[in-house]
Length: 359
Image (cartoon, rainbow, N blue to C red; front, top):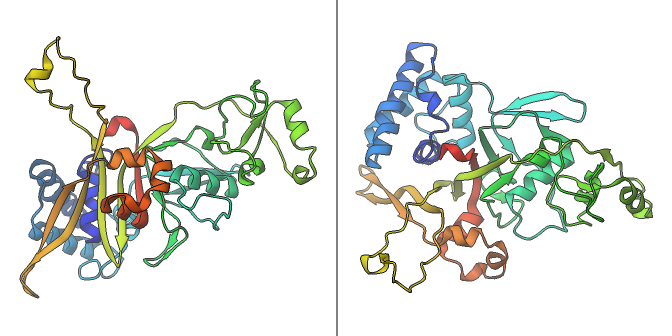
């Protein structure tokens, strides 16, 4: 199921990774993998919403022949392992992410794994924007280049341990403050910021949505004259980097070694009944969400026993977008939320963020 769920997240509703389907690859086996993925998996998935089990088995057999990772043919793997095989061994693509640390050293990775200790001051249901920001601040990291695709693994270890019982996938990520810049004005007086302090952000003393708390020079001196903040090391604020935004495209979830996928897609425009379409209608239209959600489970049902086959299923998740856009309500009414909402925030493992133009 890891292969089904991962490929569904990658290709069902976004073209961000379509370049893998046509870019040059080396070796006859890898070329066959690319053709099989393009013609036997992605095309029928998008045209019919269904891929036959025989095509998936062919792809698994080919991946097993080409990859150095043992067990791809007949063992369950983690999505991160599959992605690493696809990106580095089969398609040999440029790493998706480039990070810069405080010493200006550049590192390249395909997946951002958030490694944090639990913050006693944070919410019992943190959102991925906050987790990513705290991770970058704690490691003194910045994005060296803006990514087209950000694969974000929430803090958990293996299939069992979770740092938080629930994590809220942010529907948008603001990356401007994680590229070395700060936004807005001085946190205290609203004047132009000249300094920023990551330690003030980490200490949760000031409720700031950026990776560092911005200050003008005088307010920075005043705030850091307090004995509790004398050991902070404020930095010069760089020019603002605005508008660097990514949107949530899909979430891979895991529970008891079974992977499923939630996909967030642009919603079609609502149908307006004829009796409401005229100019004299006094009825107020229902607010329309720009996104809708679908849930994919490749093993939702099964026909027959050992010699049988799995039956995949795709379900719509009504109002999921509204729940995610109202985290305060979700936090306080979590027990009353629909099961598909609770499953998402409890089992989220890997979030796919893309540039908005690629939906």
